[in-house]
Length: 168
Ligand SMILES: [Fe+2]
Image (cartoon, rainbow, N blue to C red; front, side, top):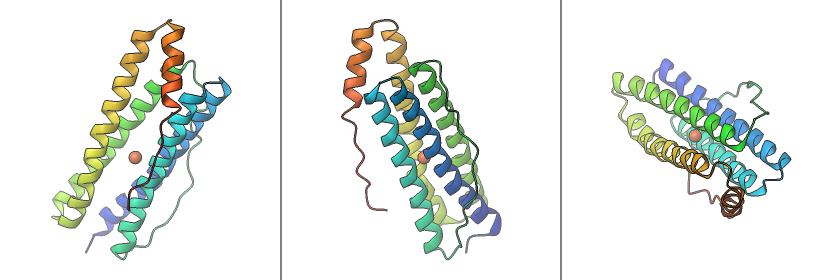
């Protein structure tokens, strides 16, 4: 049995994952506006991934007999000064997601809610991947700096990114 504080926090995280999807789609739109279709594709895929994360929590809450409720969301940032600025924003966003997942894990641990502790492990591993990915890309973008050839090669590389949702 999941207590009320924990179920509310999980439901909040479901909504925050949907908000994350919104944040990344807004970045994709910024990239499309700059005619950087590869970077736009990268963030469209990222937005899909976030929706998948939300659905993972949605299914878990349903499985545990908890009624899911959706909330409204803040307007994401739509304007960026550069692709690097967008990736730095995304990296900060992921760090906030990690803080939230850790908080959820603390709640589950305090309540000895073992099924939820187990469920959240997937998200903890995922956050390590997400943070590492954004950190690496930011470092590459900084190294590329004003080398436009390298920058457009990276854009081309990201055009190939796809997302195949695993089973929920
Ligand atoms: Fe996520």
